[in-house]
Image (cartoon, rainbow, N blue to C red; front, side):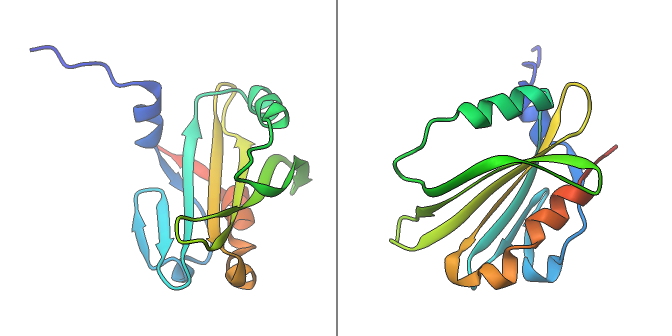
Length: 142
């Protein structure tokens, strides 16, 4: 029986991404996803098979979602690297407000690394800098 070819998404999710951030804040992890229970937080990294400029246009043109408030998006340069950001506040299924952040940087000519960070608003002091540390240090490990 022939094996089905894996989709780009499946292959990208299997890529290991090394990042430097305070992993003690996220005691549980599964591959490139890190979790904290109290307060709730998630930090996740994936490789996306899309060119950086295409990702930038897509995020810039993304229509505001009615579930997302206080949306901010744009690009900045840190340590000589261009980073696309998309942030906002959403309400989880229990009615708690959660900060959501997407950070994207170029990994190769054909792909990007995206770091997604979610955390409770009252935990901003604890988690706000970790996604920035993660995206700046993110590298695809072979």
